[in-house]
Amino acid sequence: MSARYTRCTALFLEVSCPFVLIILTSAGVLGNRVLTPLKISAILGKNVTLGCRVEVASNFTLTQSAWERQMPSGSVTLAVYNPDYGTSIHPEYKHRLAFLSPSFHDATIVLEDVGYTDMGVYTCKVATFPLGNTQASTTVSVLVEPKVYVSAGSSALIDGANKTTVATCIAERARPPAVVSWESDLFGTSEAHLQDESDGTTTSQVHYTWQPNRHSQGHTITCVVHHPAMQSDFRIPFQLNVQFAPDILVVGYDSNWFVGRENVELKCKAKANPSAHHFRWMRLDGEMPQGVEVVNNSLVFARPLQRNDSGVYRCEVGNDIGLRSRDLRIRVHEMSQEQRTSTMAMAGAIMGAILALFLISVVTIVLLSARKVPPLAYPDKVIDLPPTHKPPPPYSEGPTTSPPAALPPLIHPFQQAHRPEEGYELTAREEPSTKFLYHGARKPAQQPLFYQEWICHQNGADKVYINHREHYV
Image (cartoon, rainbow, N blue to C red):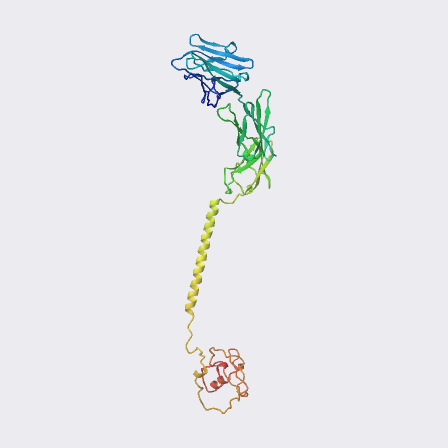
C-alpha cells in the first residue's frame, strides 16, 4: 500500500473542501481501490466533507459501502449504503451526517456542525463480490477559528504624553494559536502575550505602544491575524485619536491695509481635538477701536479703516486640552500699496531727470571753459637751453665796472617764468659784485639778480636765457 497526501482546510464554507491529494489504497490484485484524503481539517461549528471514491473493475460487483469511526471502545458504523436497500445512518448522527451522492463509485459523506468530539480516525469500507472488503482511512482534526477584535488602550492619546498602549489586537480562543501582528509606519513597538484556555484553545494578544503626537491624528494602523482556519489573513484597521490643544491660524491681513479701505476682517481659524469651545479677540497695545465687532470668531471692521486701527491684535482659543493664542501686528498706511508704488516710481523719475540735467550742465560748463583759455605766445616761453647753446651776451661800451672776482652762491633756483620788462634797477650805492638786484611783482627792487642777469640787464637785453647753475661747469 502506498499513499500521497496533503492537508485540506475548509474556510468559511458550509461544506468542507474537497481533498486535493488523496491516499491511494489498493486491496486485491485486480485493481479495486478506495481513495480518501489522509487528513482533513474541520472548522469548529462548520460542516466537513469526508470524501471516498470507489474504483471497481467491470467484472466485480459493489455490494455495500460504509463509514466507520475508531472509538476507544472499538469501531462504530456511522453510515451504510447498499445499492439495493439504500442508505442507513447511526441514530446519534442521524441529524448531522448524510451521503453526499451515493453510488457504485462514490461513498462521500458530509458531517455538519463539527465539534471537538468529532476529532478522530474515520474509515471508508467497500465490499465487492467476489473479492470482499477494501478500505481506506482519514484523520479528522478540528480547527478553531479565532474571534478577532481590536480594543483601544485604557488611556487617552494626548499630544506630547509618554509612551502608552495605543491599541491591543486580540485573536481569542484559536486552535492552533493565531499569528497576530501590527502594520504601521509609526515608530511604535509591539508586544505579544499568549494565554492557554481550558478547552485547548489559545488566546493571542498583541499590544501596540507609541508616544502620541498631534501630527499623527487620524493615522491608521492595522491588526493582521493569520490562522489556518481562515482562507486569508484577517485585517482590522484602527484609527488613532490624538488629542491636542488648538493650532491657530489668523487670516485676512494682506499687508495692504490703508486708510479708507472697507470690508476687511480678521478670521481666527483653529484646529483642535477635541473641538475648540473658547474664542476671544483682544488688542494688546490699547483699547479695541470703535466700530470693530466680533462675529463668528472673526474680528470685523464695520467701517472704513482709520490710522489708529494699527496695532497688535490677539486671537485666543481653548479646548479641554489647553489654551493657545496667536498675535498679529496690523499696520494701516496712509495710501494703498499701488499708490505707494506709483509715488515711488514718480519720485524716482524726477530724481533721474534732475541728475541728468545736472550732468549735462557740468559737461557744458567744462567744454565752454576749455574753449576760452588762450594758448601761450611763443615769445613768452622761456627756453632752458644747455650752456653750449646759449648765445653770448652782447658787447657794449659802458662804465668800467669790474665784475665780481667770483660768483656768489645761488640763493635759490631761478624760476623759469615770464617777468615783466619793468621792475629792474640798480642802486648806485651798491656794488654789483657784492649786492644783487631784486625782482618780483610786489617788491621788484628788493629781489637780487644773478650775475648773468645783471650783465644782460646792463647791456640792455630785454629777454634773457637763464639756466640752473648746475648746468654750468
